Image (tube, rainbow, N blue to C red; front, top):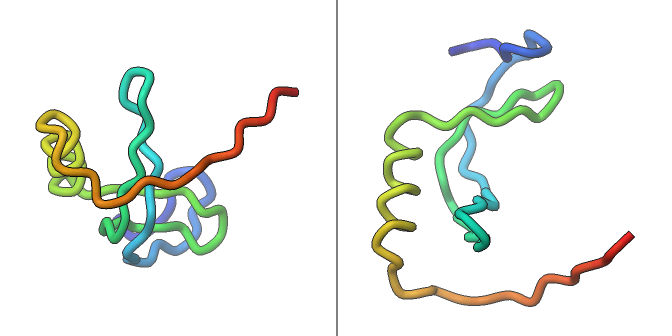
Length: 74
């Protein structure tokens, strides 16, 4: 894919952070390959990246690090 489905902006390949929700848990993936729209920021993952994320979550690997996340109720 070379153009964004939504805004038709140009896509560029980047290594990004992705916050993934799995049930009630959140997992932050770092250094994951994706195509990102330069105009609107929409993210597209190649099938290999999606499969890798699913595999890692399913097998619950050792956690590399944890970070505090502020939660604000509005």
